[in-house]
Image 1 (spheres, rainbow, N blue to C red):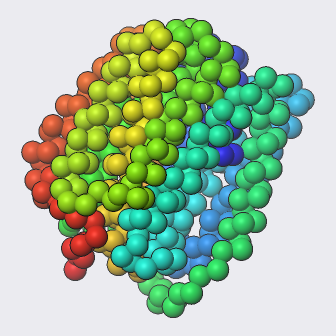
Image 2 (cartoon, rainbow, N blue to C red):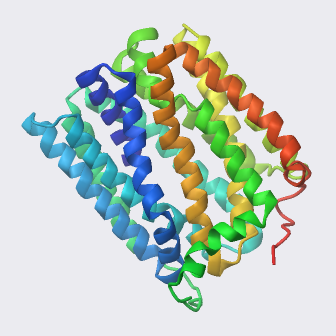
Image 3 (cartoon, rainbow, N blue to C red):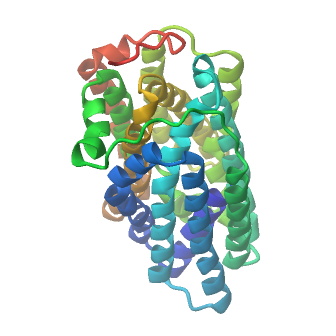
Length: 384
């Protein structure tokens, strides 16, 4: 909830200060750069130290950065530079948080229940993604400090709650911190075409098709629905993902998982095209709803493959690379969207991105036949 509330406030505040889609894209870039720099370190840390403590400390660091945004907004001295600096610190915190939290999940549930647990976890997260943007947009009506203040308080709560997690787990032996160990996650993914195909598909699909960074421009200049409407638009993909997670909890994907994943990515691209050409707030909301539902299928398949086909001793490093791919698609995708929108216009950039996602989907079906043929998540094929 806190991250989404902060994202709404940052996006709206940056656009109010600059009226620039390129500056909106810069928000994604400054979050992405710390992840690139720290990826190998964060993955190795997640395999050497208590993953729960790493998540809690990283979340506390994010709370401090958001607190800086509160103070700056209350003092009316904050500008784009200060906002970017705080967002970069949040990005660094998330670089440590993501691989540790992803690798922690299989330590908390039996292996056979991992796909369903991921659906439950994603559903809980998407619930927050529905509530967070809407609340953030409403709170922004009282000023950015109100939205940032609530986000800071929730982030502190998240850190405390993470410390309270209890797990029964035999500590794995710690590998020496040499170059071979640090880079082993990358080598493992290269040897597994199913994992490589799934995370690279998500990378390019969201990199091209993600329109999240441009939502403030759509809300303000195209759909004319204001800050509260921006919150609703940001919540729409999460609402669709939440509905799909409920379906997946009660009716798992079953067989032909690979084909279903490709169908979902194709639908993601098509929904992006519809959103780009829409001038109706209702149709735009519906398109984002479908986009989120399709993305949830891809998330569950990719996350389950990464966790089930990776030994626990390497899950942190493999999850770190996976997080880098996710961060590349989300944060760098926001930068790409801002650049293309500044060059071609907001609507053409969004439509071209959706078409690009469809093209990538078709191409990946040919490049990764083992992923297309993957059958069931409840019968994983552990790699050596």
